[in-house]
Image (cartoon, rainbow, N blue to C red; front, side):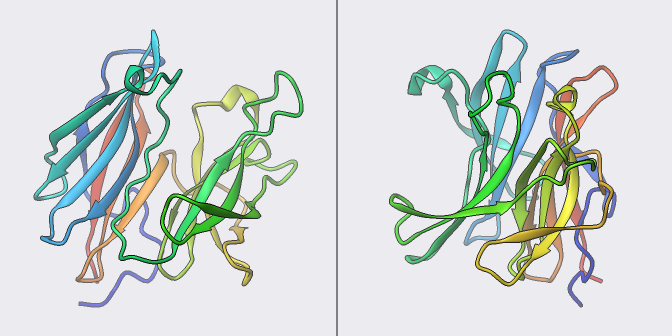
Length: 235
């Protein structure tokens, strides 16, 4: 089968709920997933659970044989780390060698404007000590992503997705945009002038047959969020 040539996005496959919202209404979210394919062909998925009175309450680590039905392996509560919040986890299987990370940064130079987002690029030989290489993706003034750009997935060929929003009021309601490499290590630039999905925190797992398994956080009508997955088959 041939590989998918366009970027794999929500809506290209059949969506299934991998993790239901933990309650009704704003602030009840499950999502911000990170996923990897294990050696035996099964999936390992880590995601964040948030409820109204506990920002970023816990990170859940789960396994799945089919990519849809998740079995919890561990729950890491924020109290375990003395943290105010648990944010998006980062899960990857890698051979010994170079690591690459696109890291969401919130500028703190203006009080009350800390929701702003950019993405930086860093590399590491062991996953513990990191070398920072500067900003990888920046917002575009006057556009739908003027307030923030948070890289969420990077394919092996360098194409990427990111979460963007136009204003402070859209915080927690980011949408997905596309980006491509500029030619400088880790640096990206936006594709197009509109978002391509209402999902946020999209993660993309390339499959051996040329298809992809997607995981993403999706908003519901009552403003809660659920964790969804899709299989985008090879063509």
